[in-house]
Image 1 (cartoon, rainbow, N blue to C red):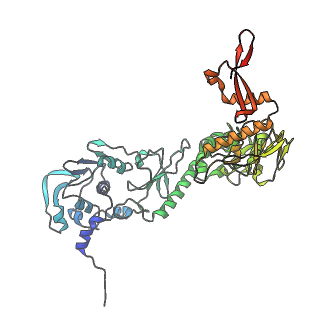
Image 2 (cartoon, helix red, strand yellow; image 1 turned 45 degrees about the vertical axis):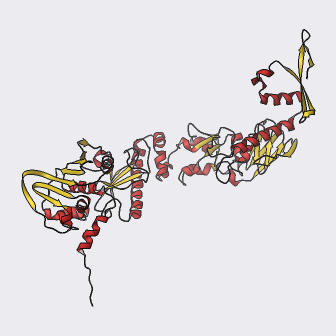
Image 3 (cartoon, one colour; image 1 turned 45 degrees about the horizontal axis):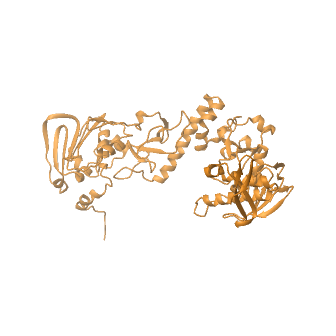
Length: 543
């Protein structure tokens, strides 16, 4: 017994209509045919009411009308077949999408009833008096909603001029409209080659149509995306829509590798043409984004964005609002001589507040060492305080007590100063609280409750910021500090009254009160209004 492959022609004709996944593939196939026919311009007209679509090009026309109805048999010349791998199924989309197809080319015309054609009826090709240099395809009964919007996306990288309902469409990503460079995979346009504003988003075209795009981008300007026009001799798109590359995951890696190589060539040229300072200023982002930071290894200058100083009280927060970028990077001489101390610190958390407070006290520069190549000369001059042992000691300790907050319960130590040590660094902090472990150290110059921000991020397990708990604990710590430090009763009461803002109440203005603490119907105090005695400057109680 022997078997062999057989083709059920009726089944092929019946099921071919489901091969195309997108109704707009009809337009791309007709545009593709026009381009292969050498067209310089394609005119598309569509009437949504009559559902008639007309596509006319100025190419060399159709030599053999039988090829229109020959499935999987390309009618293109040997060079086109070798370079573009046509599948021979493009026109079949017209048969399934329309009820009637009228094709005119040169001096010939065919009027196709699509249902009859799919039933393998004989179709007459007629000679006409009108001579058309190119090809005109008129399709009836075609439903293409929003074609006006989709045709702009379809044609944005197409090499041939496209007109829709009399309007010439912009083709910003067509190769002729881009500054591009050659590469082993095809022509490449890199965003940011002049100003350094690089992009990782890439739109990839094959034979004029997009086969790879960022998921959230339908169209883009050339200065916002990289654009690749692939060599069709090396790449193939899947049958029949041609909207994705075959082995897309493999090809995507190759394309990204080629883009990286293109950036390398661009940066090497720019490095020879620009002063080091300008080269680093313009192109550092692209060097870091595309993995070419080794180009900085032999330069004395570095980008300013790698350097920060502690400009505010360090707290646990995501925005690192407590640091400020330097206006200019330190010089190599300043770094190598030790005039500037570079330290590497991760964002403030439960374990490194002491290191951050030391950097604040000693003016150390926070250095983003990850932003440079591992062989860069600066790495030899970076310190890593988080890998060193820290010491914290309260100088002149006055009292220690538990803060019973809503979110945190640390031990609070009031003292004259906080002595911090880490490696060779030592500093005495007198103006701000320091959190270490479960202890908050409060030196004499700290009166607020902001140290709770160093003790906790106040973010719960669902990433919700507990602002009310923060406010409550901030106030609780401030109140605790005030109570523990109170030595003068007048100053203590005055401090409390200032927080109340009594001047906001017109009823109280000019009044004199007698306050007794420790007795009375109110919790721990009583208040009496005193009336002034006319002419004496004295007052007496009236309640």
